[in-house]
Length: 352
Ligand code: FES
Image (cartoon, rainbow, N blue to C red; front, side):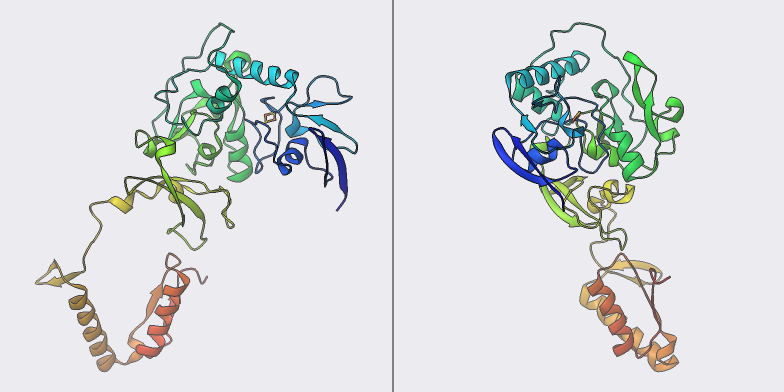
């Protein structure tokens, strides 16, 4: 691997050629703020919050789109850099509702975090503000474009992670907004509601509808789990408040899927607390299902399967298993079928 030697904040470092200044600083434990940069998406250098000083370069380059070069001397926190970042934040909040007290994303909002860090409470730039209507005409995602900073991460997540490519910048200048083709609501577009756009949104512009009003982000305990819906085995975090699941959040340390999820994984968890779930076995008596104990249910199954095997032979039995079960459960199904029922009639929905 070709290595490049450069100096960042007075320390010499050797990093792989081709990485960006932002990534090189990250390797040294230096955090450069970022709003439009995401390690899983292509870099576009849209927000400019990641500017740094590089000796010999005019202006302040965006570190997320500047590749390291031999002998480069980078400074990430000079007065000019701090001033530039502050001005960028002031420009962003000039047209941003400062309703952080009630914003669902407070605690996760990068804009709020950087405003706090750089001491930006309001903008000195007066002017027109957007007054878009909140879009909540679908069951999964609430869009508040007044809070959109046009970083374009949702557009890139849709194109590069989900590969749907339904979003883009629409209109021009002050009226620029992110929209599906024809500027329709999500629900009338080709959106598949995977929510990958929500997962990368750095502000309150995109929010999981199910999580609204369920608790501040810092109040939610995160528990990593595996999706129960198919055999892919995607991981994500369950967001828990008061021992109840209130939402799902992507976990970047998921080896199978990264932060990508589908609609079922991200939004299909509400069955967990459904009062329609069975909590006890049911046995049909006189045409009606009546609650039974596990012992009663298992005894009945064992008796009936034994009778069927006795009367019609082992091959009268077949077991169909499911990718929604764990490997261990599927192993047990085939073991039971072969060793107990005495037949090889066992199949699995993911075989073909
Ligand atoms: Fe570099 Fe936005 S993070 S320009």
